[in-house]
Figure 1 (cartoon, helix red, strand yellow):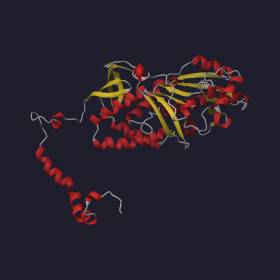
Figure 2 (tube, one colour):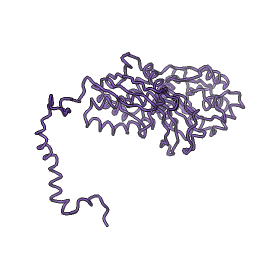
Figure 3 (cartoon, helix red, strand yellow):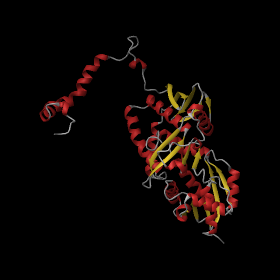
Figure 4 (spheres, one colour):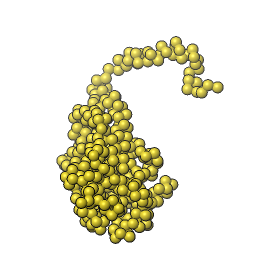
Length: 412
């Protein structure tokens, strides 16, 4: 009897070819697992391709709510973006897929799991490390990297073996989609000088087709988690879906970047993340009201570490647990409402309020009436604040560098 293997199956080119290759070349009984993280697409077409590839079956797991609740929203609480731009949509989905692959393998008694990630990409690392951490006894087969098959060769392989994949030589993009975002690579996008063709985008309108008038949306957060739009309480999936559609109508969320992959190469990537761009900005603005300067600055430092951790596939680590606990603690008072104006590809804050706001109008006002700030205290504060600089200047700096204008100039 053939050993069973669970294949992370998207229904696209790479995994459809992988299903056939695992069966024919490796002799496995292939069980395809499709994890629905949102925007799954043509499920019946994927099921047909799995059958054409000779898989023993294909299961679809609805993981949308868990994806947002346990992966996306904790990252949102940290304001995480990779290299300051990418909201990590694909990267956030991979640890959940790894966990579900292990669950399925245990259920059917499989000895191995497989994926169709390329040997040049980040996803192979995320899935391999995730599975290896949760179930080190399972063998991991990286079909594309082990088969050493290029995309044009994969297209030919699929055609030869009767697998009706969606990609064509004329449109060879590789895409990944979930509720938090959409990523696109390959084809003409591999030349960073070339402007992305409009057919690359699917969720967002070009600016010349966006509405003539802006839309203002009010987003409610409770302890850092978005819970309502325009006063209507919504579950995570409905809320993110609505914001994604609304943002896309206004051309919001297009990201064109050359990023540094974990494997050491640079890659040109196109992302569409309307809901992520809107919610990340709204959450950041609400934190301006509810966190101290020290909290915000430390969170900004931690956000970089958190982003790298997610991008590098280290979700199931004690390091992540410790960071996540700190971030969760900072969200205790991040409760309130933010009004965002969406228009012509931009997101602008037009209002914010919070129950535990640290902003005190009576201290900030410049009007005499109601002003609680005692300006007479400022002189003593300034003297103490500048005292260390004054002492050092008199005893060291003016002796070493009499002309302080040249303080930062290179020595001649």
